[in-house]
Length: 189
Image (cartoon, rainbow, N blue to C red; front, side):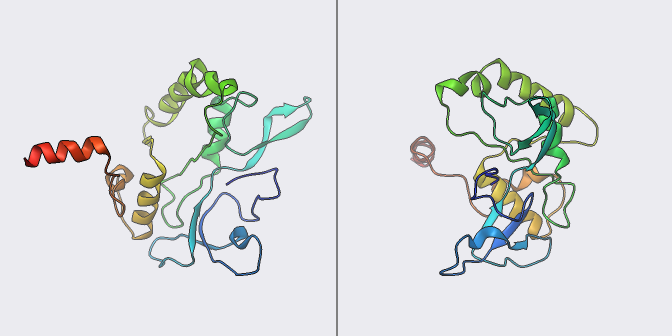
């Protein structure tokens, strides 16, 4: 999420929430209970949405707003205006507004998106992110995996405070890879 302008887009947007399965009812994830500090988990599935907004900066035909859905691709490359729009949606766990989540997506590293995802355009995006949100007082920038983000959200829900970086491994530990398993065995042996 988001998937706009597709039919699969939920009614609930720019949120972190629990959806409850309703057998026989399509799109049970259309709505749910917001994840909140101190509120117990409620539902079958936690959804962590990316930003969804109207983009008046990059208008279609110079007139119509684009749909900003956080997707990074060659037809809509990331730039500082988009980054600021992602942050402005202020997606967070209720009660922990200082931990803003910006989740963007791409649909694989297709050749047509190579430059945007791995080239100079990506370098500019990371430089913009770091200048705006790492190097400015009052901000801290963290790049996280889906597992780490889930852990950070669960830590916020549990009322943890401080630097969210401390909670990357809060519930789900790092995956055990062949390389890390071999290193542990070598250390033990």
